[in-house]
Amino acid sequence: MTSLPTTTPAPTVDALITSVLAGAHGPSPSELVATSVFWIHHGTRLAGGDTTYLNQYVLVRLGGAFGGCAFEAGEIDPAICRDASGTRLDVLLREAPRPLRIAALDAYLAGQLPHRDAGAEPVTLPAGTPEVRARARDAAVAGLLDIEAGARVGLIGVVNPLVAAIRERGGVPLPCDFNLEATQWGDPVTTDMHAVLEQADAVVATGMTLGNGSFDTVLARCRARGVPLVVYAQSGSAVARAFLGSGVTALSAEPFPFSQFSADPTTLYRYRTAGRP
Image 1: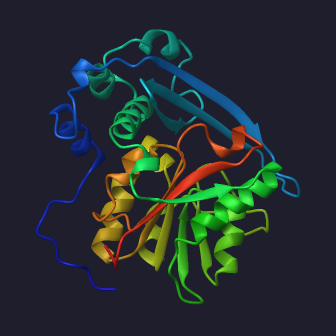
Image 2: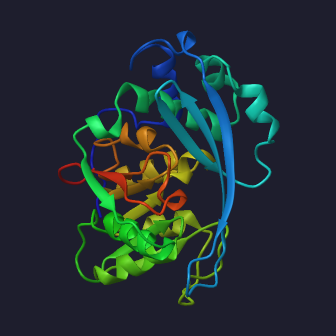
């Protein structure tokens, strides 16, 4: 697939942070304080599966908004909750560990424009078991894919229900994850993100790419190849939204509290852009 010409520099997360610090997106972060910083560590094994998902999230409350970002085990010490709560937002954006920087940025952008007010398509996940809610969530994500039968879909960050949802839409998943060796059905999972990005006809990436620093690479390669990029984000959902039309072609945004923490109906928000990146 030929590359599309561009006359503007490729966007990056660090450039977005710099613009926020400069006041380009609202009030100066130096005038705002993180009300609280907290984290959640939990494990999940869905019925019928043999994979236990272990997730850690660091979260920031900024007034009436929350921001969150997943991180790898051991990347942040629990003392961050005590040390960072009550800290000026500009300090967090400049000096905090990357996942906390993303969570702070997410809270800021969500506070300036909540997903519920942004013109996104709200999708209500039904009440029920974790399996029912996970299938509904991942079907909503897969519904953002506009693919032909047989299209290869790079999956950067693997959850089994999303693998199934991609297959149900006629796609061929190319799963990539740093923490899994195989899907629930025995498909091998590679750790070579670059190989997947070169083969894929479309890419679906988790918001955790924002926290581990790989988002810029995914975004730049999809832009260069003209490949649609769908982001499904609990981590940094308002951050990913800032890249719609600049490489991100669709987004499933799930702000905190996330669907796995409730058995009642909750809402995620779907965004689409026209055409390819």
